[in-house]
Length: 117
Length: 115
Image (tube, rainbow over all chains, first blue to last red; front, side):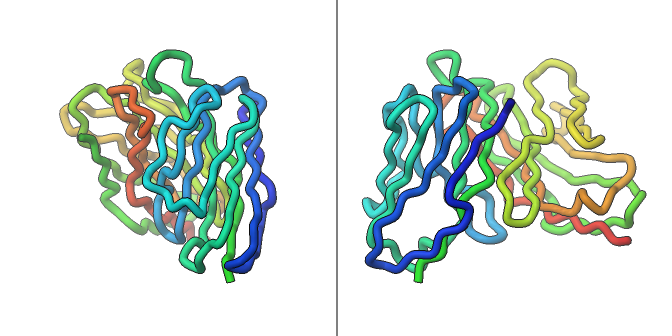
């Protein structure tokens, strides 16, 4: 099973709201990723977690706060977002069997379509 | 540094005719290469992966790709297009250094299949 699940599928929020996106995988993968994808563009990497520790933060604004409570679960907490943050947010995971990520295949979830009003 | 170029932003084919989506890459080392497909409002689905074994890689749904080192290409083909193949396709190269900034995406090719 190569399934990554994400909830909710759609989210509409105001600029003063606090909400969270959830991602789950049960493949035993130890690397998990958040991507942001705008329409007609490729995904852009936001965060990488390796063994539940934040490995990469691609200079993402602090209104996005990732959390990895355990090896299967990845959250993205949202607060005081801007309309330009509206996008498809994709979660991915990969095995990360060695020191690096060489040869890893990333498996993507279906995404959460976020609209900020 | 590595990069990937998808040579066509849009490709349109008739149902039942062959599909060719072109991808060129640049990498200092032997890369891993992927093709992902994204249907409207969906996540990315892995079509196939090249990792320095056989140069002709077979994927799901009848797609295949051939790694040509001399041409630095990894074009995606399918003998006969189906309406369900209409989607966005991304050619992706994996950083051979093993960095966590693993994937470099092409800009995507929108495939339209005409009845």
